[in-house]
Length: 220
Image (tube, rainbow, N blue to C red; front, side, top):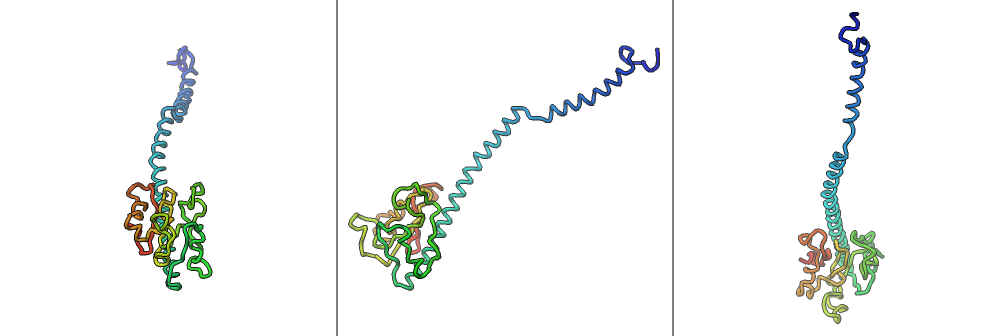
């Protein structure tokens, strides 16, 4: 038996060499097959992403609402500072009326003397809202002659220039009570300025206006 054919199948000395050459190719095919993802693995990944999104998106939206609430409170504080400066110069707050457009209610704070450079815009404003709040994006200012009570009391000279209330629409985007002066004693007696105020403990997105009164309180 020739020495070169010893141990080779079928007496072919090159068969062993071919088997040795084939082995690395088999390993490559195995690696290639393992490099892809199965359908089950892809479904698991998609499910994990969906779960994370379900957790993250509501938290993100809630953080947006909290940010807008903080901005509204800061804007109302800025307007209140301007109103106090106006009163120092004029001995009274600007007088407005029930059906005055929102920009007109605080127009005296921007001209002829600029107590405010511009009137801040409510971040919760939306054009789809009906009524007063859907026309203009400004905050709601109500002087003391416009206050909560019977129809006969909506326009009254009582407390005309000595009190006021400011309101933001809040997360529900509606003007609930701040169209009327919530600093008026009647509003405290009926507690409408408390019941109609936005309170985050009722839920981040809940009904109520963000209020600031001439006394510096929030209607609590």
